[in-house]
Length: 318
Image (cartoon, rainbow, N blue to C red; front, side, top):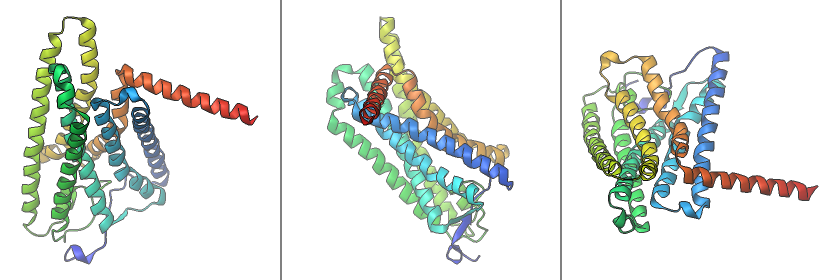
């Protein structure tokens, strides 16, 4: 292969060459994928259905669930199909599309998590100004800004990465396409351009991370000053799930992409990629609904209503 135009596909990392284990991988990933679809789908449906949940916090949570569905749908179906049909190939265009949508969902989700920390900060530290600072128009603009930033970030990185001349093979050391794996194929020093773009994005994300940390320092200071135990419990119940999601997202993504090469190994890289690309989108609905009484109550009402309608339809048909 002399350059990127001389080949039309990449080879993804297979989990195993044993047929029985390939089928086991298919069923395992299918179970995780269905759990993510069910959990995020229930959150989206519940928030859209219940008028009491039409608030800024739940509006942002709905968008977060949509991004989680987009993120896991970008990588898992292709990996499942590869195991089911015993193939490693992904087209050049498919790899670029996978990289773009994965970067878009990941970047937009991180910016959305930053907006959600601002939402909690205003709700707890400046409750009298909540309606003014986070009106419906402001919420739509913030969500649109997060999506637009994610789109621009994904477009720049994808265009920069796939404009490089590639001549060092096409076997991706991961079960989906990602920037570090593609850069290994570069046969010129032009990859430094993408490395510089990555550093710029890293500083930008670091700024968002600092904003989240400062917001939660102010939030915890305000919560600890609340005189009633019930008030502190209610404030923590809306903040801790978001903080847990941010901590898991940031820690796994940073360790996966910024760890020292001496601690890197194919198995560790694979486990980390599974954690932030599969497990987190599946766990997020559980984390947010675990301590949220409003969401669990609305979900139980929705499920009860659906079951009642099913029973009525079955009884009427009889």
